[in-house]
Image (tube, rainbow, N blue to C red; front, side, top):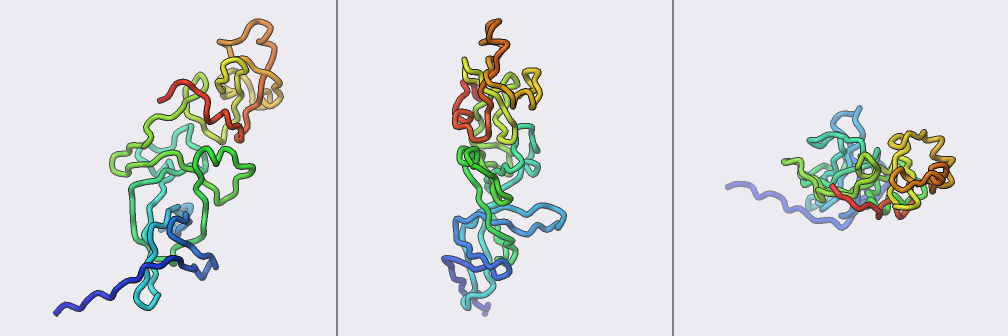
Length: 215
């Protein structure tokens, strides 16, 4: 007769002893990569289980992918702390958890006063089999019609409220930081061409909300 598999218990929380942190389902965690030269994997805990004695803890995770791990690779508008919530689920040993982290929504991330090492953001869900993203359309900005990269400084036209990368309007970042007023080429009169505008910071609320076209 086959030996019955020992029953497993579902845990509400688990204290990772080597980092002295308690994790719970719904938390985002850093996990040890198979290649020590690679950055930590990022995952969301879905479930925590142990054997009947409370040992041999394993976690059911949903992986976040970095842009370079996706089929299309990293693109210009992807932020350095950007992640994609994938459809890839897995079981891992609880001992592979290296720390806790926070994966913010895109809007929340752009309003942070400071970004720590354990802060990330996610604006897309990712299908690891097809390479498809949800949503498949996001606001685009500037003459280059690219989605917003929160690592990049942009300037806003006072007339149309669109946002522009300094290098797309023949301007250096240093020049952009000194602006008092700015009117884009389509909105500027001869007098306004000598003026410059509001400098966009990564905290600007309007930056995330404005833009008429999507792709």
